[in-house]
Each structure stands twice: as C-alpha cells, then as structure tokens.
Amino acid sequence: MTDPKDTAVALDHVSKSFRQKQVLRDVTFSVAREETICVLGRSGTGKSVALKLMIALIKPETGHIWIDGDDITQLEGQELSRVRRKMGFLFQNAALFDFMTLYDNLALPLRRLTHKSDQEIEEIIDRVLHQVGLSGDREKMPHELSGGMKKRAGLARALVLEPQILLVDEPSSGLDRITAGEIDDLLLQQKPHTTMIIVTHDVLGARRVGDRFAVFDQGRLAALGKPQDLEDHDNETVRRLVAEK
Image 1 (cartoon, rainbow, N blue to C red):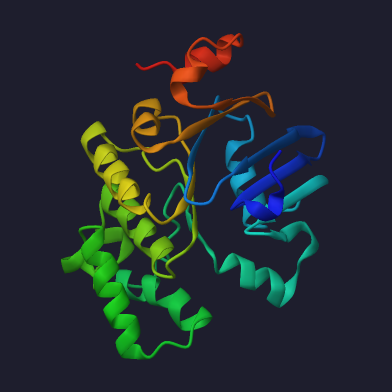
Image 2: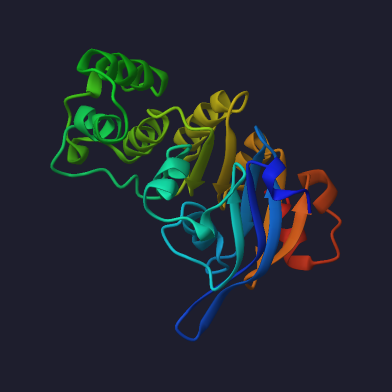
C-alpha cells in the first residue's frame, strides 16, 4: 500500500464488529488525493460502516485509518475535530434537522466551526444552494422538500465547509433514475478538486462518477480497480456487481 501519509484516505488492516457479528475483516486500501472511489457490495457487507469509520463516528477494533496524513484512530477532542473539518458527509437520509429551515441547516456548521461573519455565511450558503439548484428554497423546512431535494440539501450542507474529502452514502437511494442522474451530475462537479468516496448500489452512476471501484464481499475487500478491469474478475460476486445493467 502507498504510504498513508501521501494519500487522502487510507485504511490499514481495519476490522470492525458489533457484538458477535464481524462486519469488516482486515480491510486495506487507499484513496489518492482528488480521486473518486465508488464502494460497491451486497447489503450488509460493511460499506456504510467503512464510511463511519473514516469520519470516526465509530472506532475499529484493529487497524489504522489515515485522513490526509493523520491517523484518526489515535486522535480525540480538538485534534480529531481539526481533521473532521476537512471532510463533508452526505448521509443516506440527508439527516437534516427537522426543526430548522434549509438555510439554518447549512448555517449551523459554519457558525459552529468557523469564525465567518453573518454576511460571509449568507454568501456561502447562497452560492452552494445555487450550485445544487435550491436557490429559491432556503426558507423551507425539511418536510417541505421532496426526496431529491433532500439529497441536494444534504449535499449542500456537506459542501458549505469546502471539504477536501467528501464521503457519500447511497446518493441515489430512493430516487428515480432521472433524479439520481442529477445527483450524479452534482457529484461530477466536485471531481476536479475533491477526493470522494461514494457508497452506492447504482453501478450506472458509479461508472459515471468513479475512477476506481472498491468491491466488498462478506466484510472483506474483494477487488479494487477500474470498472473495466474488474469485469473479468475471478470472483463472481465482483463480476455481477460491476456489470452494467
């Protein structure tokens, strides 16, 4: 594996279990700066758990996780917060605060984690909402947003801190093909300057956005490579998951 300090994200022999269930088994791979990795696998193979480990929402039993040169398994408090500020996270269900307007949902991380003025915050939010096509919706409450709008809103909140690394969990889940394609377009806009790790079941979207695929099978990393290089893989699960449908 490439020296973890020279990568955007690196997992080094990471294992994670919950009670008696082993979810990740000795997973090792790295993501270069400004690369997009799409993580594929059957349900329950540890894909979303891997994302939560990368942002230290949970800790591994064994192994190390490096984010932009820092081993976050060894960090706590302010040092961990410093590294987390480099990352944005788009949750599968968008995870917006129901009691806040869209504007306040986006303003919250800027108010808590930066020293920007109210005017600067407003300018950033207006720019990001325009970017995701929600310019006229800043005063809406989450329950007033459609599923696709919530995904866009969640992406907007992930982008307000201008993260170096964007972690995305199932961006097309619950969306029709056209709306899912629009979310893919928004992710493509981030590619020139952002490292992205995208957990997805949507192989068509993954082929549009991803530089490489990481395929999980039964908690292990079964394959890592460009989509076209995995089509003839000796693991049948890998072949089926990367096949165009």
